[in-house]
Image (cartoon, rainbow, N blue to C red):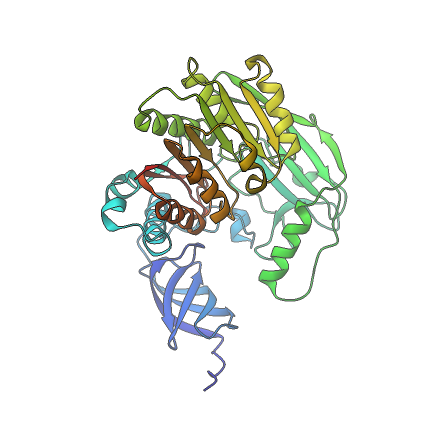
Length: 430
């Protein structure tokens, strides 16, 4: 029997957090993912996507029984409809508790890790760690959209409109004055605050946006189009920005990848070498830094295991990141070798089996081919860094099925006021 069309608004009690930042409830026999609601609340939700028989998506439009953790929306841009601070209505400490719950859930449900393994992790015993600094003003790298009149701002949630209210994530002095300036209509701006406090802005040429069809699919298509190479013009600062971790410096293209949170690179590097030092029984000779970008983890490994580490192989598809790595490690002789290409294609040609493997894949995760290649090489320690909770859990499950065990998991609130969370796991042969 075909279900009847849903009412546009339903009253629902939500009781658990979802991986995408929504809260989960049930209405008319279906699961309902409600954006803007907090678990424990009863809300009136407006259906925004009713295409699926088993679940709908909705937006909270009236809060009937508010959570004690609900606060006024902390971000003017998010309050105006931008897609930036989607958890800006939740007290940040409680938001970290929700992120912990999401990670624990996917480790069990998606990764199929056993209860004892999960319960013994730092993630379970102490929760998601807060990075140094405040919950606002932490972002040192951002992208802004430019509207048809040349005004810069945040992109609307799953839309092409530009919101001109200022987001609270960028560091002081990054974007506050940009509203009074004019840029090429429909362009994008890459804005970076470097390690010396200098701002750099590069303008990326407009793309032909998809403006019709399903909003979710349209947003995905436009993100892919924006990721393709485009003409660039430096409008302030330089083409490259300097970043530092430990005693090393990197010159990264302003449009290239670097961690958004100012404290994230050092925190993750310390976590990686801490895991390796705790679980490695002998001095390492060879390490693989997969999806390694400019080589932040490679640098941390070299500095920590300086006397024994002979080779570190960095694999990444980003030519700009690998050029930055070659420049940074120029004084390390031939100890650092860069390999350009997709990890799944290049991993079989890396030569001698590694003692250490660090992998930091994109949101799609590493996947079966890469995990199989890593476990076939039998490294003594694997450290997996993940920015998508479900794919991170899936990859850990693949490692376990290939003869490794999860020795430790930590979570980091690297994106305060948003649903995103970073996780780091240490794996060793079972």
